[in-house]
Length: 112
Length: 110
Image (cartoon, each protein chain N blue to C red):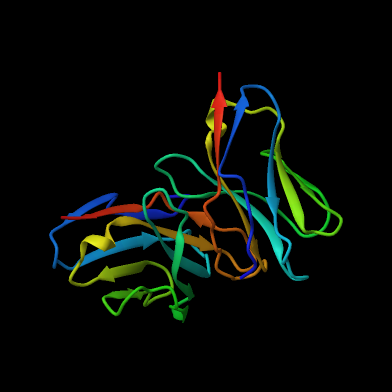
């Protein structure tokens, strides 16, 4: 497709469960970003990839959060032992080198 | 990361122009001014960006103060589909993360 695709669109997890969120960026986009957006807040940066290299993971809130992009295209954000405070929309964005960012529609994670 | 200040909310009538202000008094020389907007249940969408000169595109215009400490996003004729949260962000153009604030909620009345 033409845009950034995220799946699943919605995810309900029981507290303590592990979840994996997928991002398919626009083909050829070098940079990929993950953001977390709590209700009523602006998105907050989690991590950044340039091709397969994770260059910045300063925004990951704890060691329960892990992201990978092994072949420089699709990326997965994994959250282990989910907690209620992890409930949020997780947004993925990609960009070509020097270009603007295109965001996906996000995955809404609800931890019950 | 340089900080921006925006009003919490604004209201506009349909078909009228809207001027969304942004203050960024600590902007550095390498910072571009980016505007994104987020419609309900969607990810943020690029609107426009600029460095020093005013910019126009099909969506909006960006007016940048001469001292670069403030800017204004101009929607020339607001429609109901322009109701969204508008974010003003400072960032170097290439490869840098975007740091979002709370943005301005724009409501458009018919």
